[in-house]
Amino acid sequence: MTRTKNIKIRLTEDEFLRLKRCAGKRGVSALLRDRALGPDPRQVQSEQLSGLAELARARNLLNDIARSCQRQPPLAVIEIIALLIVVERQLSMLKKS
Image 1 (cartoon, helix red, strand yellow):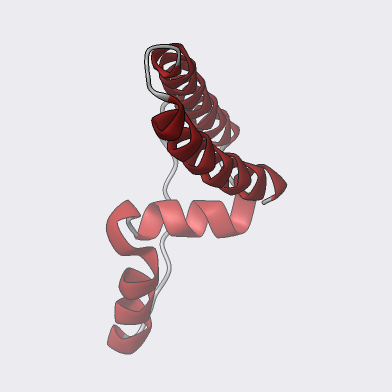
Image 2 (cartoon, rainbow, N blue to C red):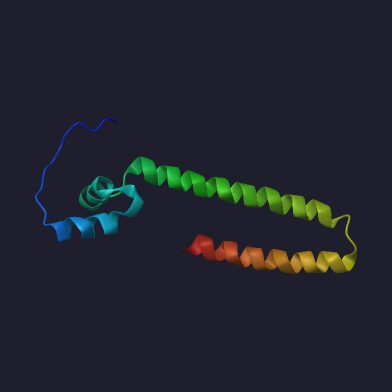
């Protein structure tokens, strides 16, 4: 989608600096668009897909760890299981938020 329309507003120097600080790297235009119109659905979808991709990578790593446990001595397996429980709890906390 191409944005072709402009809106001009007048600001004091202090107001402009506050807006720039608040906007950060994304820029004043993106900040004002987001505040006035809400988040861009394309960006929200992209962030959700990125999160799902991260979870898929984590799942694959956990599968690799489980397969490698079959070749480890029992004490090492117990340590690995303890670490996996920690990872599981952290992922559960992420899922809730």
